Every structure is written in structure tokens, then in C-alpha cells.
Length: 150
Image 1: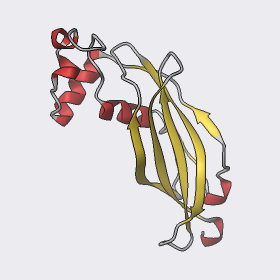
Image 2 (image 1 turned 30 degrees about the vertical axis):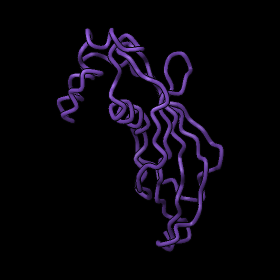
Image 3 (image 1 turned 120 degrees about the vertical axis):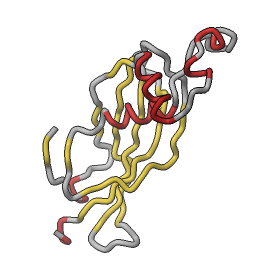
Image 4 (image 1 turned 45 degrees about the vertical axis):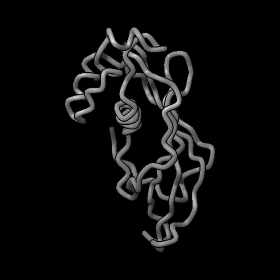
């Protein structure tokens, strides 16, 4: 991890990067359930899940989101911060033993309507499994300083 000033003007539409992979473990399921209080049997009861269409435990969507977005945290940009996420979708299930990585693509940018000197940069985040299937997608909104305002 390193620090780098990346101003609004430096973001290019269509620019893309991919993270390293991370294998999802049973420990991830247990720790996430403890953090969130989500102990639903779909995540923790192997015998119950054998009766369901997928036949095995399904990762918490919020855990897949947290891990997948965490993988993208490789640069500290002191002139930008996260404004939030839009259009979050859990597209496919993730199971114990699956390996995920994240593709980040700059999909839009525009001046921020409320904050002169700042722009909004939209990063399309796609979390992808080892079969090259998108399992989660969301838009990350960044508020970024413009060079002229700096």
C-alpha cells in the first residue's frame, strides 16, 4: 500500500484494474456471522443447506462485498474519499473454497453538484470468482479534488 495523489482529472473513463485473489474460508463465515449477528442457517448449517438447491452453505452477501472491496484498497489517495456505493447486486452465490478477485473500472465522472472544486468518480466494482463469473457488482462513488481547486 502506498500514498498517491490522484486528482479528478487523472481518472480516465474505461481505465480498469484487477486485484489479487482471496479464497473464502469457513472461518470467514463464522467471523462474519459473529460481527453481524447474521446466523441464518443458509450460511452456517451444512445439513440444512443440503436440502436447498445449492446443496451447500452460501456466503453472506455482505461478507463477499466487504472482502471484495477490501481487496481494492491498495492506494491511499489523500485527495479523494468514498462517498458510498450504489446499485449493489448479489448476482451469484459464493461458497467455501471459492476464490474471488475484484475488477474496478472507471465508468463515469462528473463535477460534484454540491461541492465546487470536487468531482464524482464512479468505479464499477465487479467481484469475480475462479470460474470468471461475476458474483457481485456495485458502483463505488468517490469524491475527488479537482487540480484547479488544489
